Image 1 (cartoon, one colour):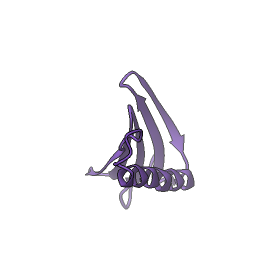
Image 2 (cartoon, rainbow, N blue to C red; image 1 turned 90 degrees about the vertical axis):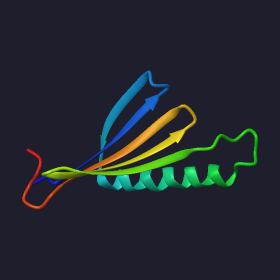
Image 3 (cartoon, helix red, strand yellow; image 1 turned 180 degrees about the vertical axis):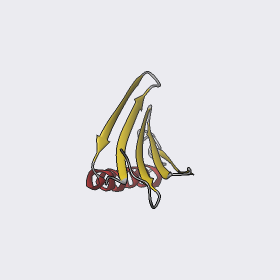
Image 4 (cartoon, rainbow, N blue to C red; image 1 turned 135 degrees about the horizontal axis):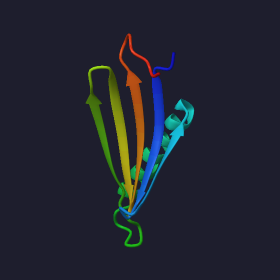
Length: 93
């Protein structure tokens, strides 16, 4: 029974969008990397040539599953890491 699903969504300039299913290990690796990138750009705010990245974390709870979304905005690109986790007694078909 599959009870977890992970994907990465990329949106560039609100014109180019793509969604890719990823494994849990890739999800964790990308999450760690994006959080590091955001922290580094925020620590470097004084440099004129460096843009500041932003992050948002959301948790949405539904009847049968929970969706966790991490969004990193890097310049004109949004990268979202999404984990969909079924609640006890539910699974993906």
